[in-house]
Image 1 (cartoon, each protein chain N blue to C red):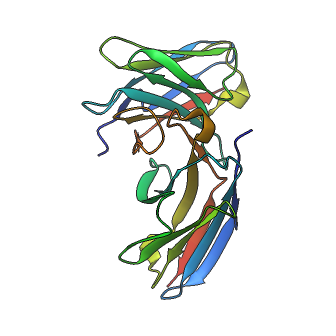
Image 2 (cartoon, rainbow over the protein chains, first blue to last red):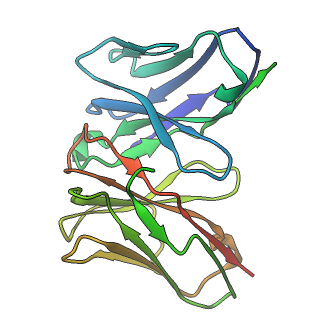
Length: 114
Length: 114
């Protein structure tokens, strides 16, 4: 069935360093890949997304890359700041079912040390 | 504020009981999704409705049911509650159905079963 794997589960970096989170998906028909940031006890918030006709997208310190052939996509955060500390979830659209539902990865807890 | 409204925010109930969680989507959104997030767990897709009709079903237990009403609000009914049902239940909405629609999450309903 549809599955999204996310790595690493935890990531600790020094302030100012870069952070990279990687995801792979199983349904080759998936064509929409959003990333959500969730602070403790809060709702997931969309931070960036990419569609299958684009290989890379950047928004200030955040970038996402997509490799459809390998079925993986990554989140890159540069010049990390303490306020970037949160849980990050990757997701893939439902793919073959084309309903729009998102299948999420297991999440990555990012800790940025001052 | 995402515009997705969920009530109640917190709920404590006993095992064997039944509860109803309510969600109002963003103005203009026709799709509603329900997700379950247990402690230290990712976001598990439960069910999706579009304009009153069920569109997709995930790992939703038979003890759980949902519906979307003509005014587009949705309710998630959880019955014969067990301790393991304690979780944060998120409602999300999007304008349409189909891959690529941006999905916005509500603040969630914290359910504690004692």
